[in-house]
Length: 567
Ligand code: ATP
Ligand code: MG
Image (cartoon, rainbow, N blue to C red):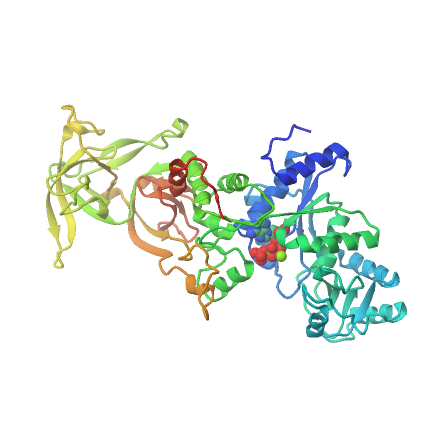
């Protein structure tokens, strides 16, 4: 085994200790256990990186296991997207993709075993009654009137539950544990419920389905998982997890809980994300504003950036909230390294250079990535009519505005110095075209006489430009905590009405004409962009991944060692 290299945290410490004591014979075998009832989100990425990362670090293995015990909400579409997403993040379960539903037969046998040993019984209380009998945190529960059925009767009823004799909800199989336990999960938890529902894998083979708690630990056990890593809300379930594997006398994995990822301006709940999709607040699970990994991918975030982010946030035993700007910081850092620079004008303003020869075209050399010389250079055509960004011109420039304005000289990146001479307006009085002159001596961006200009702007040659649609995004929610709502409102009241802005008629330099879907660029001065799958030949659509400004870097430079978690 290679010496461990991952970031230090308490779960890693537990594994290091187990390796020392030989608790699992030196094995590390983890699993990532999604329920296929929605698309994976950035919170799942934390769990994926943790499970696969730890196993890789210790020379172990990680299984992908679909926790599919809830037939009503699960679908093959979700299974497929989950597999695609885990692979996209850069992880490999090799030949170990399993389903809890593969174990339905074994789980049924184990249920029979607990009935025979007097530790499980068929209960005829309704779901509401079970809840009433369970008691509260301050009051003990009451035993079910069916608690003392004989083993024979229980075996008979449970088998008849399985063969479909009884309607949904009429009976359950429950573990006989302790109705006075301070832990509500131990008050005779339901093991099986009746549900005449079609399962995405087992079809109608079953009409009884195991509860999560009765399936999860045993699935871990069957797969000989060593460290069963899950989020903190399962801490109170651990005694039950342990109880089942101990009473059954089977191999016993160790459950360990860690903090869920929460992000500002973001909701990480599959149920709420499903609502956004179903109610049409977004264009689908992979809408680039969604925190799903499919959405994040479409937005242009890289798997490397997500893995770096997951490493940076660490793992702890208390839930907190991470700043969205920290995730964005890692995306910018990665894209800064790898994205080719190009020039694109997203809100075009026509510029005519009156003294530039009609019909002349020059090929200007431009650097593809100042961070990476190996990405080389390209040629960008320059001609008499160009587009510049509307915001790079002001007829009445405020103080400190150094970009183009009447009489002002600026540098065109990789081009010449130009000076604005006059403007053309439409009938509404808006500037629709500006006329400039250029100084032929300044090719490449410097004046032989040493005169300086205060700003450099980007441009695209009009005759050579490629048209594109550009989609700009802001956070999907307007407030930091989108689940905080006023009385009578739900979380959708917090949706940001300006989360999507579509610009048509953006002008791109011609090197982008055949940009493939998902390819990523830095549009100089504007941000990082990637090609959306809505693009068709000759009609490109770009998503803005992020603008260039990095609030996180600012926060960090202002206060070195600033806390990343909000209290
Ligand atoms: P949600 O609450 O969003 O519906 P879930 O917990 O029901 O998610 P599962 O499919 O059961 O989703 O999750 C698979 C694994 O991912 C579990 O081990 C779960 O603990 C983990 N996980 C889910 N959400 C987060 C999160 N926000 N941060 C870290 N891990 C998470
Ligand atoms: Mg779950």
